[in-house]
Length: 363
Image (cartoon, rainbow, N blue to C red; front, side):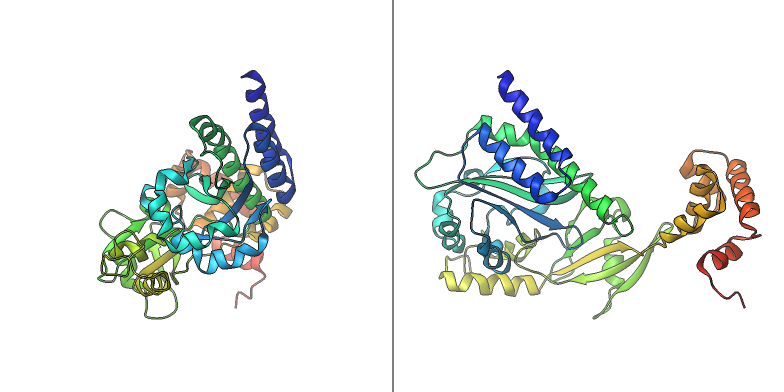
């Protein structure tokens, strides 16, 4: 038992320690294989803007399966078909817990499993701070035993650390554009089917219809929520989206022909596409802020606190009183920091400061 605990700690340390993502994933699967046996493994990153699964890192399985999976078979993957409203991040689930052998046999996904190949699977959607970031799974072939509770518990221990490590890497690689994305799904008659955790925090209860209302027939729109303005975009439905479930719910279990009957496998894809086209999937993304403003402010000799207060004043659109409340300081302290920053920069107002920082013509 102590040796197993040490192996788990070693894997977790490697997840944080490896700078290269490929090396980190190789170390992860190699370490997991020392804890319990499996034939192959994959990690599929998740695009936070669309909830789509991305091209997989394959461990002892053919990478050429990426394209057919993402373009077609993901729509019938029992893991991907789960209702995202019930998805618990960093919780490990066996394939046998979400689909019976009979369901798999009559599903189009049964055509994909021999390509990997596998018969049993253990998977988790890993994430951080409510954001799904990747799906990780390990597999066993037909004839081998299913994964047991101890093996589920071991991946459970590792999953939150993997989610946190991926989040840190994304933020470090893309700090200027990393932002939390709100996702909403509306049905054919305009009923709200789903809001992710970010959208639930942003949108007052009962006012989701306002988001749908600002969306034009084509292109994007903008919407102000509180002090932040968001770009509202319409997203296409794709097979590899975690939102696949909503395109299949009118067909019962997603395996039928649209009339509650099990149709031929060739009909399943047409049903998924037809239902997906009726959905309205919307993203709420904060307008990009001028991150170079912080860099330019740093050249004026501002103290760290002056730099932070001045940057937030310029970028947030908050009043001094609102900024004081956000920073848990008095309004007089905010004004004092701003006066000193303006003095050092040689500006007398917020607008003059922006003109100077961005190199604009004030005339």
